[in-house]
Length: 423
Ligand code: GAP
Image (cartoon, rainbow, N blue to C red; front, side, top):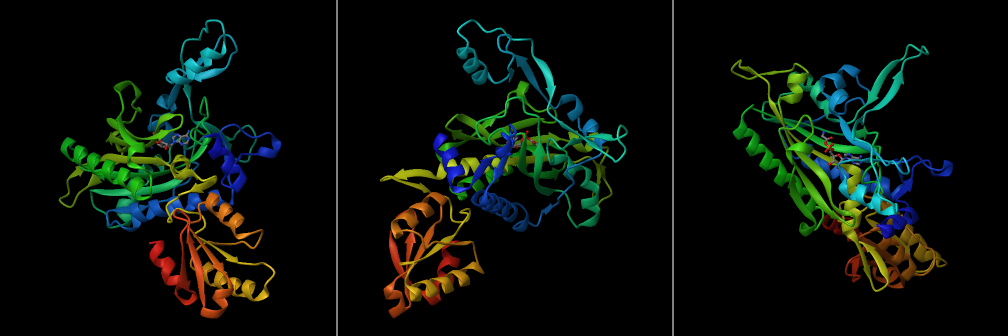
């Protein structure tokens, strides 16, 4: 973890939020490489979950919602974690996190006593309106989900979707977490990527779609390079299930801090649509309240786990073996020598041409070895070098990040070469 945190800061993936003013606990800022990686994760998810399907449509709902939404959805009452306070130092913890409780107890030499657990609501309050004192108290959304539910009838009537169908969404969520930690893993501001899939209200349908989406989601992570052995499913015990869930399983990742929740798959039954008094009329005029199978993943957690899984050290080099589709920069272009005008101008032309198709970096500092070193740490899958041979036969070397092997490619074929490699 320390190596990943240091790499993220050094290369511009992730910085602490509001750092120059001492930070703000539980918030993180994504730098130039992090913002690109995040965008690539979101684009891949959207392609898989919306673009390639005819039974899913996307929405982008408002973060600020009428407070009634949170009352009806049960979040005002039940979106809570059990909070306990250490009677020795008055630090507060989650009572359900045994590992965090026991590692805190080890800090104190004496026996630690705890207050009785209290329900602590995670919703973040905000105030809206222009007249001081008469402003509306609202809540920043604790899950992006409700934006899909409140638009259920809008979507059903404005598109041609029929049950079974899904509403997909990506966006920010906010939680007043008791103990933010493990870098971005548990933050107070984070992004979610969710599918709410509406089905007939029957157990057999529920089980069928639950299994279907479980497999789709785990396969998506492995298709983007996460090693199978680092993923597993874990069923929620009765006592840990969210207030809306009939049944829930997590996809977990084998993180350095232990197996940890990556994405939740929930059978929410008709909890939400019933709560909002929404229903569906099918083609035969039959009215019913659909059930919902939900897949809810965190973008920040995905980004962290993609980085952890891609991190490797070989012969003193750090290499981020990110899947080429996720890599922030797809290729870097170098002139072999920065002081040879004909090499620089040829390399510039290649850089400008490739820029139209993908994110490309330029580097003419130091020697080639140092430039490879920097791009390996950034996860760039290909490095193109323009050398003296390029001026004679119009070829360049293309170096592969993971094998460090080089091949000579004709300049005129570079675009086609990368189209194939990045597919
Ligand atoms: N709509 C269902 C829902 O929000 P959840 O299990 O509470 O379910 C879903 O959250 C996902 O959101 C988690 O699996 C995780 O990836 C991400 N997530 C939740 N809380 C988070 C936090 N404090 N920091 C970062 N990611 C978080």
